[in-house]
Length: 182
Image 1 (cartoon, rainbow, N blue to C red):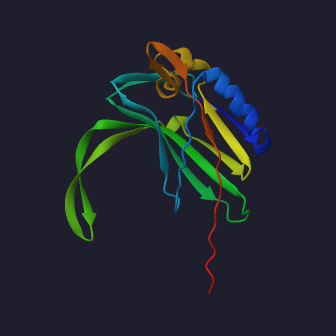
Image 2: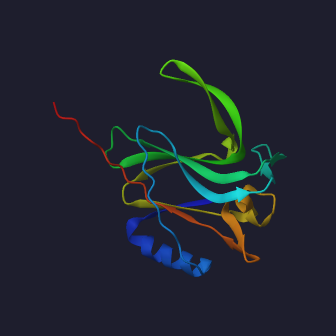
């Protein structure tokens, strides 16, 4: 992935450039997160089985096969307690399998069996950014996304009508605080 941060006053220019590059309409959505619980953005739905290779810090290449599912990013935000307009964003790519796995959970003290998808987190691709209200972040495919086995290719490129196109995300974090009065 490639990641960049900009100021709100430059957002229209960035959106205009991205629209021209993508030659298609962009979509907007709002992701609200409470109590530091992460939210997810699905980048590619219903993928077939995929092989992804990652470079590690020690310059080794490792690859794994992953089952069919959804390619998404998990986002968590933590408000800075000392600065009302700052937050720390943590972003992790992950695959959520289509196939589910039974798990025993407790709800109100009663054990139950629940079917949950298997999650494959790419912890080595996790990144964090401290951002201020009024800033935006752009996430796009990195230089290796042309490789069919790269994570950038699997998560940020799509094929429609035999035409491959890149996908960009523009995130506008906004901290909303509620004060309790006694």
